[in-house]
Amino acid sequence: MATKKWDSETDLIIVGAGLAGFCAALQASEAGVSSVLLEKTSNVGGTSGMSGGLFAFAGTDLQKEQGIDDTDERLFDDLRRVGGFKNDESIVSLYVRHQLATYHWLKAHGVLFGHPEASAGQSVPRSHHTKSAQVIEALAARLESAGRSTVMRKTAATRLLREHDDGPVEGVLAESNGRTTRIKARRGVVLTSGGFSRNAKLLATFAPLQIGVNVVCGEGCDGDGLLMAWKLGADLRDMAYVKSTFGNHPDSGSVRHLLLFPVYRGAIAVNKAGKRFVNESLSYKLLGDACLQQPDGLAFQVFDTTVMEKTSPGVLTFDFQEAVDDGYMLKADTLAALAGKIGVDPAALAETVSGYNRRIAGGETDEFGRTSMSNQFGKLVELTRAPFYAYPSVNVMLGTYCGIGVNDRMEVIDVFGATIPNLYAAGEVQGGFHGAAYMTGSGLGKAAIFGRVAVATALNSALGAA
Image 1 (spheres, one colour):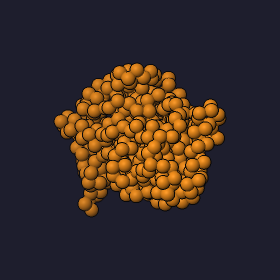
Image 2 (cartoon, helix red, strand yellow):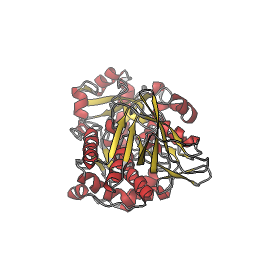
Image 3 (tube, rainbow, N blue to C red):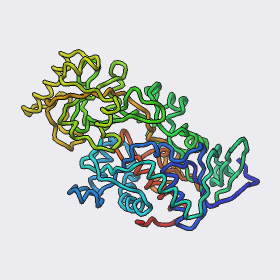
């Protein structure tokens, strides 16, 4: 598409004001260059601002304070294993190389981290808790004070512009309030526009099994960044592995998820027949696959007081007591009474729980191969202490975790493996990092890390620790 006239110019155009976008824009400001951060909705933050706020980092001061021995090597191994070794090893290595420096960088820019929790896919506790709104607010405040970036809300990038089909990307076509403008990017365009959970056509193409699953994500996650890059010949990665997440309450709306993971504290998951159907220590994406195969796609996370005592107040996905107080978690003094509340045959549930307890007590092999609470971490407990609890659980689409092909410099590559000059992608819009499944905390982690890397590549500069 020829670009004869520009309405405005900047050094970098960043498309999408979620975590990756803010980290990219702040990285650019610290390097002394100008940027325009485009956000098509009225609110910044995207899916990141609605998330559980968990970041997967290894070797941090907070881990050391708790005596947690975590290393780059262990993090790398977990990411590769959880991804089924389908993820791009070079991109996983990139994450690992820059993760600790990015943790310190985020702290230096006002992000507040809580002590790490053990989560899905982690061999040691490394999910560093944050309040997602606080993360976005802190970075937005730093970006504003830096003074080199313009945040344009209600402004959608609709096309990537270049002079020739094999030429560099020169800018974007943007629309705001019915007005179309051409913005030139002297140093490049960074796509940080999120996934495509809200695009029914793309879901039907790449993930038909997820049609009908409740969606909770940023309102702008309709795949526009992916489509713009795809039009230029960009490769797509990991599209076969689009999965929904297990553990959301059926009454969740479209703007707030009600995810809870008692299974990663020792609960079991049963279907409407009162039977277990999966190894509950698996990644919640794999649990989601199994849940979709159950009647009505519905399961119940069942546990006792021992598990309830592992609640983590204030941690969105592990605050079990809050769910009880809000009426989402069901509670009963006996298993039979609990079965009645969830509409499950009492005898079937009793048999399931007693069999599970018997195998734990006797050191027998679990029928589904479960040996830990979560990914080889945490000793299993018998479910014997009243009162008992159940959390009705279905799947939810929080993100697509796949997308535009990039190399280990966050340069967008085409279907033949060549880079598309001056085009970069970071965060949920990119593919190649997660592979077949997702480790908790790596979504926010990659948004921060790869947003910074994309800008460093565009400016031919190096990343610092803070």
